[in-house]
Length: 135
View 1 (cartoon, rainbow, N blue to C red):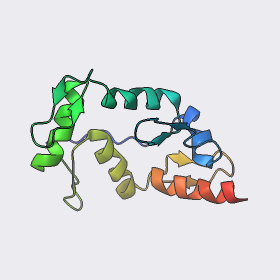
View 2: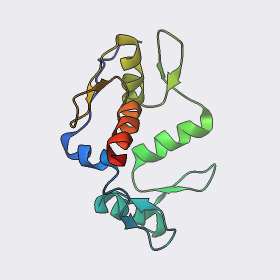
View 3: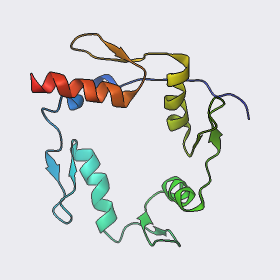
View 4: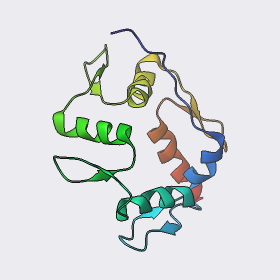
């Protein structure tokens, strides 16, 4: 398999979401699942409607888009086409593969906008931002 370009990033509009101050203010009235953005709640609401024509034959979950159904079905089959050349860990999506590879390259593309500390993993930045939110 050809090597994919490695990219690590956090979108500027997402930075305030990681401070913990405005998280999950939009709640689903059907199942109470919460979202940080209204557009994510709106997309979630399609799950509860009959508008999702695509159905997973394994578990019955419904999808609006074919690519979402295809990725979901890979969870059931165990298919993971992207493989880490260092440890052999496999991934379903290119984005997860690329994010994982930042560990090996020591590329620290996730930057805290408050103190400028840099991280190689989005999750590490998220944990770090929790500390700022507590102060």
